[in-house]
Image 1 (cartoon, helix red, strand yellow):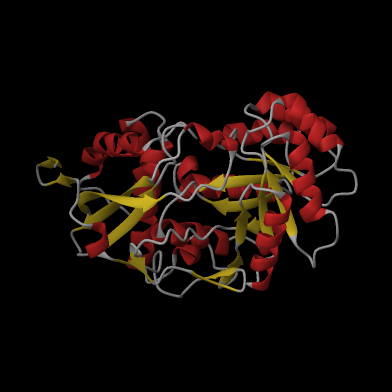
Image 2 (image 1 turned 120 degrees about the vertical axis):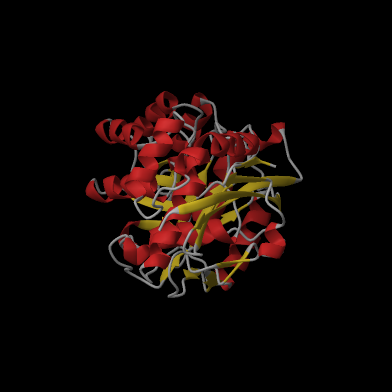
Amino acid sequence: MKIHSILVYLVKIPYRPLGSRWIGREAPPFLESTVVEVATDTGLSGFGESCPIGGFYLPAFAGGVRAGIGQIAPRLIGTDPTAIARINHAMDQALYGHPHAKAPVDIACWDLLGQSCDLSVSETMGGRLADSVPAYISIPLTDPEAMVAAWQQKMQEGFRHFQVKVGGDPVEDVARIHALASRDRDGCIFMADANRGWKKADALHVVSSLDGIRCYIEQPCATYAESLTVRGKCRQPFILDEVIDGPQDLARAIGDDALDALVIKITHAGGLSQARVLRDLCVAHGIRMRIEDTAGSEITRAAQAQLAANTPEEWLLGSYHFQSGRPPTAQDAPVVRRGRLHLNDRPGLGITPDRGQLGEPVAVYGNGSGPC
């Protein structure tokens, strides 16, 4: 099997803000998601997706994804997409860094590997451990009463893993966390996510006010150093997210005892290959994790669910399900029922992309083609 061409699609996904303070600088009406199709000489195609949130959240933006793919793609034409280690080496030789641009190609190659041997991606990674994985839901930042009402609604739908958006006024944030997590909530897991929204002094105020509260504190400050200081004063288990970019960062954090859990975003990591490295490091060191992504459509949902299904559930704090309200980019993606993502048993990512929703490619590489 050889790569015949690489096609790039642009999909606009309606943006649904959750009230995080860092997003206040810019609230786009939609996100630009880049979908990659790796087409082969056998007629099989694999698909992957990368959808940054603007250019103001992480060091990734949609135009950069597509420009990076343009740098990478010519190096991959004619190579075997199922030789994923060689694919990633070739991408690293063509482009230093920029994992968000490499990720959709890596994911598409895992999709092709699974299709070529009639196994799901989770099976090709060493075995599917479950046909469903816990999903989590975000409670948007608003007043405490409204957040409790949102939690109660999602409880009725079967969710037990909740990300509580905070990162505003620290006194109000303490009230929000107390309102939701001050009592035993039928086995619920709460993760108070500041999205880097607190100054160090504010974060220290919050964690000093949570004695007896059962919840995780997630990414309180903008930098690793600030978060490490807060970790030293925090009695709640601690999650790091945006300040961990790859295995080297995670190794440092493990050495510093900086975290109890990690958010693994598969395109932030560089694709399923690097996300699996992060997952394995977490399991080896007793660190729980959420396996998710920054944003995306059904293609992203399928990719993250495949890695989560290859992960022992006792290590999982949940995965996300990205329901944008737009027509799906793919059929047969994992579905949410009673707070869990349920996978099918089809090969690869288990999806059928909807070419009508993808539209015409914005770039095609291979056979002398280039950006459209």
